[in-house]
Amino acid sequence: NENENENENENENENENVNVNVNVNVKDNVLFIFIDTTPFVSGEKEKKKGKCVKPNIPGLINKTKLYITNKIKENPHKYCILVGHHPAYSKGHLNSEREKKGGNNKEIIEIIEEVNKDKQNIHIYMCGHEHYLGVLKKGDKTYDPTKPLSNPVIDDNVLYVISGCGGGDADIDPNKPDSTPRYGFFEFIVENDELSYKIHKTYQIWRNNNNNNVSVPINF
Image (spheres, rainbow, N blue to C red):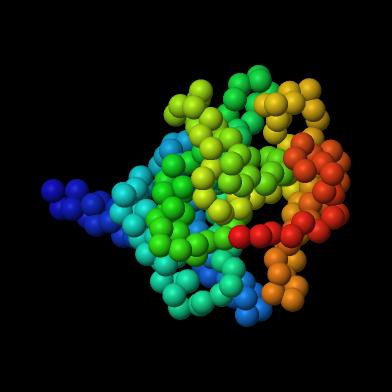
């Protein structure tokens, strides 16, 4: 019993430190907030069996929402960019066997929706994980792996950026299965209180093909 109690206490302590959040001020008008999204994604938790404790997801969601809300209150900026590893919204991708993978993560979507419930506090959600370059915005169809035929549409004003092919071959676009996308990255520019982005392609990418090295203004 004593050993069981010790293990329970260790698990509780590890749960408290499951996600590491960081905020960074850029100039006076942009706030970056970094969150650990791995505990929210079941596949990632399974990969780490024996290395991490399965977290209390509802408690962790509430803790993360509170952290983001408090940091925004403490650091009022014109723009807030939330950064995590996994996508909130995604169109998914095809693996080498042409099976559709990836897609939306409801826990991350819930966090963003709750923080933006009364007003738009988060303007951009930036992530990687899926190996392609993409920009998703209001009105775009996405892929929900729990309801593969539903194609939910984004209905908020957050800009969802996926920049995941900086260090490896890109995943296959489900709409263009014969494409062979390669490396690339995003550049965000803050100038004269305006926010814009550029897409830099080192090879071919399958989103925004006409916007390579052209500044795209972001309007909220």
